[in-house]
Image (tube, each protein chain N blue to C red):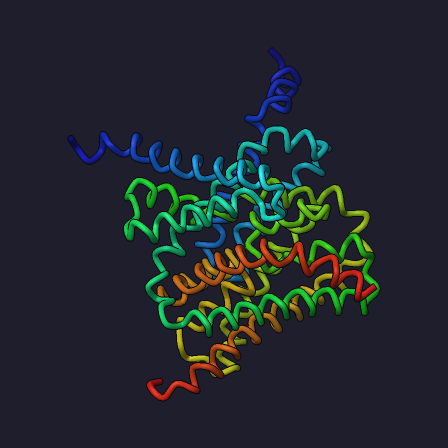
Length: 241
Length: 125
């Protein structure tokens, strides 16, 4: 069996896509650890860049890659359900603060949606590239579901969500210090609402209370986004265009 | 019963619980033609049951921790789809990045400021 035959077999089976994705992610995780868990070296961004670069290099069409990678992709839904566990565990921390946190969540969610869509239309970004911004601060698995149900590209939604998470994780410490926020729970909640999962892993690296509140903020924003975005999204887009 | 021998069945039980809630969520989402994605309905159902019983099954805990710790891996396949959008994104990359940077900073700051403002109102803090 020569090398070409092996390649034809491998590229047609899910094994290649699975190996490519997992190796890229593992390299991302190793780089992240190597650089002292710096938010600048994000494992997900590295994994996406490496995998996409490899596909371009070997000229493999995306649908062929996804055929195999869909087994990883499927677990997004399961992982979404699993977010109930950190929320349930953080629930006692929320007691007595529901109104305050709910207001903060609503404010953060609204500012995220209005500022991105408003600014994008000011900069004349084409509509197809703007609509996926609606759900960008919602955790990616939920954001993609919301976008899909609204007829918006789930792919670009995932890309914007990753970028948002990375930017948020990088900016969080400086921004919250500049605002004079000293309460770890409030800091964590703000990070989770604005920068979802990637922000949350950053928050856990900084302080456990910040991490717990960040996962609660991320989970609540996911549920709120799923409820409200399909209602206000189309209206907002029409109003701005 | 030794510790090591129960590891694998434990993971399966946790996975079964999650998949059943995910399935229930999908059925409800389709049945009610709800705009809320099925897994989010599954999340809410599981949350209600966890809060109701006031404890989390250790098996479920194990699988949920694993999945949420590596949430990032799970959206790599979708995000790699960016390769199909490269021609479209090319001329707009700078403006898109500026929008994302400004928007995430504003969102985080406004969430934080609401919490700071309200915390200052409370005499105990």
